[in-house]
Image: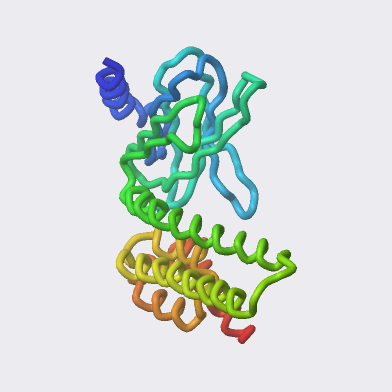
Length: 238
């Protein structure tokens, strides 16, 4: 029944958005299970500051809807200002595009349980995060082991060398995954974004190769320009 209500609401939004939000080309709607009262904010990063683009007061477990005008796919945020002081405020990052994006989540686990649909870049970002999360967890585990070993009074050089080798191999694997992902999806804005976010430890030569494989549209996007600037700076520091 809830899904039917959301579908009807979406049709209503499509028919009325031109009257209420002239120029807006992206709609964000969805639900927050368990939320009785609070304010949702649609936020955009402008320079280095998060700016509220739209907001809606939630009073009861009803679907929400907000909209914005964006000139290209980019990471935006759904921020919940909860009135219940027993829980923390939280923020969901998602790839915004000029389409209808649906975000369904819960009050109890606002960020971690978020299911986001509608954006092509977001779908790829979800796939990337699923693998990268596992790789990051393994890297953290190895790093913690190295800290424990460094505090151990009795330790062999062989154990130190082996752990150091394992860390270096896993880091190369992690960076290699980021590079491969970006090259495989080089026609999407998520490609330069993940290189900036998770591939900064890669050799600038490899980053440059991945960047040069991207079409001009992606190279001239906001994340493409940021990646280009980072590569130039990194090469200058070699």
